[in-house]
Image (cartoon, rainbow, N blue to C red; front, side, top):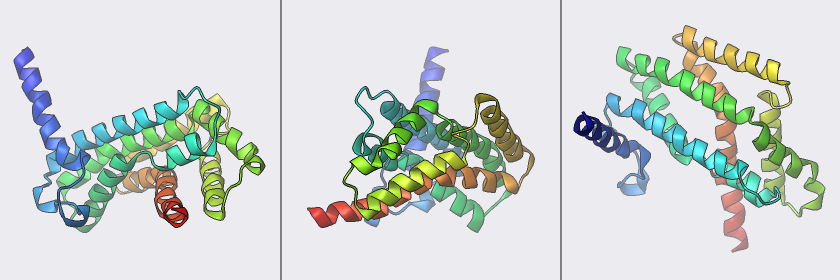
Length: 215
């Protein structure tokens, strides 16, 4: 029994590795011909686990919240999950099939629940709000100010300031919507998840550009 379970875990790890690691291709482009439909679900599960660990690192940081250890670190988190999501949802849009739709129905509630947990994470939002409330104390450039502003507003729009009862209601509504609507489930998940991913995209484009300028 142990050997079977061990073999299964090794098999799944090998299958998901093509999506959860950097691609050994020119310009790091996705090797679409090597990706199978059965690779997606375990890869999403691994990507969510990695992103959660990155969020936990921010939340459990004992140092005072700063732009660098909270906003900047958050901006560069979730890259693996971002890459998997981009590949899957683009493929589902371009070359959809019954199997891809079935995977979307399984994946969308997972992403919706995870996105809700992030946007409603009180400890994480407390750190973000601390930096936001003290933004005048920082010497931020325009890109950093935009990143901070959009990060704070994104969390607020997704219920960070609601009480616990309203947060739970909002989370359950989003999850139920993603489960019940075959077409809508993808867009609900993407809409909520895009708020979190926007932080990553903005950080990668604007903040990386800023760092390259000051070097």
